[in-house]
Length: 197
Image 1 (cartoon, rainbow, N blue to C red):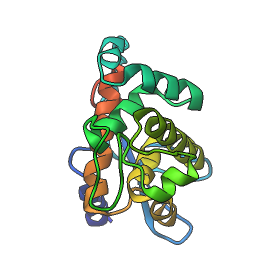
Image 2: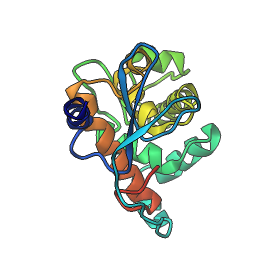
Image 3: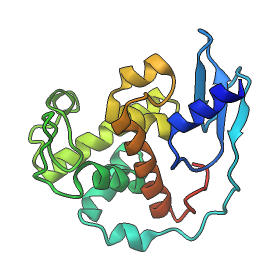
């Protein structure tokens, strides 16, 4: 069992911060998470000291590109501004004209199907793109009971990949992406890097 747990911890990524727990799902598979779900037994496999929240890093947020646009989208869709900024930084580095080889475009790198589903008319328009991205991450947060780790994983890998596993999928890109977004989110929230979400 110890070898399996150590292997799962390695899969979770060396840059993971905060407490990590393991549980067994209905099919007997192992699930790593930083959030307790009702009705499951959890065993802590990574323990990080709990850091106290620092002062809000409003200056870091208001000094970012598109700060007003992000603030409006965050209010409209009831998502943290810091999370939107963390996603934008990871997705496009604040480049409104960014395009990926897979076809994602704009600040929040919306795929054409996602953009259409979110009511985005012009994915290269920063306002339209951020509003659509905020709507989409809100949908992911709702789908995953406000588990930010799973919502961010779903933003990158798609919700089906996360739903099938009940955890961050084992894709190399997603395993790098999730800790990077969460680290930036914590920083913008004024939290230490190892603070629980």
